[in-house]
Length: 502
Image (tube, rainbow, N blue to C red; front, top):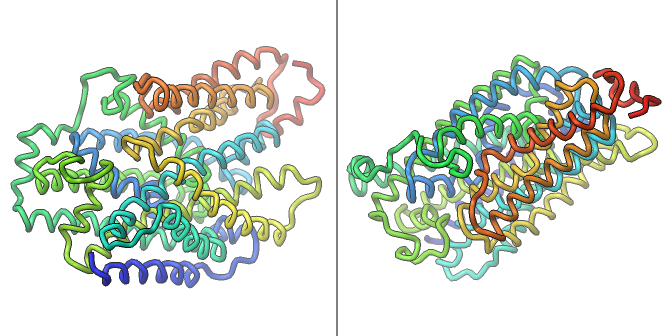
């Protein structure tokens, strides 16, 4: 790496902040700040959804999947598409009914403010942890490069820099700035993956694909192994992936916020379904990068390459195998992926803080001006808070992709379960939903902690966490709801249930 690469990266960071501010327009109220005035084109929202869920995890983590294994991770794309179709036609219509600002407003409408606040707070905590890991994913390649230049900059300092730049344009421009910057950032990091494949092929020839096939690394469908504990099995990827997508794209405010910014329900449906196809193509591109790197390094292990973790393999190629300037551009693409997720999280966290927590705890309604002020301060606070989990998880071993998805999956099942519970069980009340939700999160947290930090063995693959949470929510909530004598009205939630003994 040469100094020019660092100049390219610095120029990118400055240009990103400028672009976000330039495209954001004037933010005069909550609707502008959190929903872009509900006037964003579906294709921009679609690309923003893809950029948000991709993050730096895809760019540096997915190549490792095929480098060390095969192409079976691509099975997950089929489940993702299936899950998004369900979100488009079952969940989205309910969000567009009543001009909602957050995904959890539906729970407030169905069960009352206590359930909305419970879900909102849970989302805030989980998103902080999961996206703190994504910030770490962006810091990894930058740390490798700076060390190579003899610049001793800590992970803490790197995450501070990334957070501050992202806070700047998110603070001022809101969701409009986030979406349009996401579009540019997505194009940049996908281009970087394609460039990497072209460079490897020009260096060692196209024989790497045939060699990978002979070594069994092009296997796509996996029907062997336990479908419960093996995270690469077809059943876990298809069904588990579908439920995971329903939870992540139907009950996670980071995605729902974008869909609510579309001009209509139909455009939002197009955005979410097409995003599933695009993200699957992205998976294929970066899995191909991993196979190309396997050929380039002749299958050398992490220790043989002098690395400390598997996720440094692609960053190593960026430093060693790319010409000066281009390597800086590709690293900027990795930073782009990280910042797109971070900015999306900041906007979603601030909107949920204002709508699901602050507004529900106040005795008097928030005015637009007050909500905008609270939202901007929340953006700063959450942006700085990301630094902590990025630092905590730095020493964690194993795939950073699986780690982030596992953390997110802890609460996805409870959130999705609460939505499904509210739709299918008309007898349910707020207490039933709240207790069931908390127990579902506790069950998934137990499995995650035991598998990851106690026994070191997988009992339940991360794809099944959301389904497990849904089942616990429905079982516990359904049992509790049997106490009630008559169904509560779906539109009025707890208000109808007042005075009825459980």
